[in-house]
Image (cartoon, rainbow, N blue to C red; front, side, top):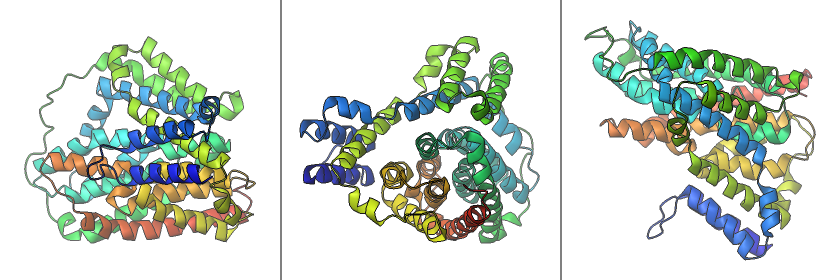
Length: 416
């Protein structure tokens, strides 16, 4: 047990504090090394380690990565974002467009990919209007997390929860769409109030779309859009057609590669294979810790039955711990703890808390880091405390509202 506990602790230290002094390690390498150590020290056999990897989750993640990669390669997201952002006639309308477009896109495509594409376009739109891009970038990062809360495919931690819990795509959406909708409204209001001087200024400069420096493959886009619509519809119908969500994602990815006009090798190069390695490594580490009984003390303290206290405790703990190791590693270690609790309540509370809690600080979610680093490359600095000033208000309000909404759903029998 102690061997597994030490390996688990070292792995999560590596995940939490990437690039430790004089140690050449980052999140994927920490997870991979931890997995190897679990086998080398006899905590798991090689066969048990392979058995501990959730290939359903990896399949869903891979399928969604290929779909998103195909969208990036054709330029569909770039084109859509540019057309949306450059029609804004005032700072307030630009804020609303940024938040709503980011939230909706993040709900049905992996949120990290959305902010990767949207960030430079938001910066370009703000520079053309001679306005400070920081409020819009903070709003974008937080909207990506809030929007992704609504669906199983919105972010990696929801994928983990959705596959492990067996909650259907449509049921997951019904539970969390109200949370996402209310939280989106809260975000717009908070950002507006915190930067009201900026939003009261008039836009200056040209209102014309910037010169398009890239050639969009419009033929590929026309072929891709119907496939994406079909995929989303199929996700919602997955429980009725008896097709698993991972299989739908893989089938859709195969369809895009074969029927799409984009070069398959170009699409496959865009897949984040390192993230898949990170997931696989963490699966093995958590399996070793679980089999060795390291997680038993946590399991013994978990609320036995879903209740208001259970919803609140899961949500609050998820919010706090995600600041240390971010939401994906947090979710992986929480899953074995709650998997024997009956019903959907705690699963949905974990999804809401781990995702909405990511808005508290820059390091709370990968999407936040992508936005901040993308801004930094353009010479725009988003300070830790400036982000935290907005994030603290948004997180307290949205997590509090999520707890209330989920409690009402639970009491009325809507959340089973």
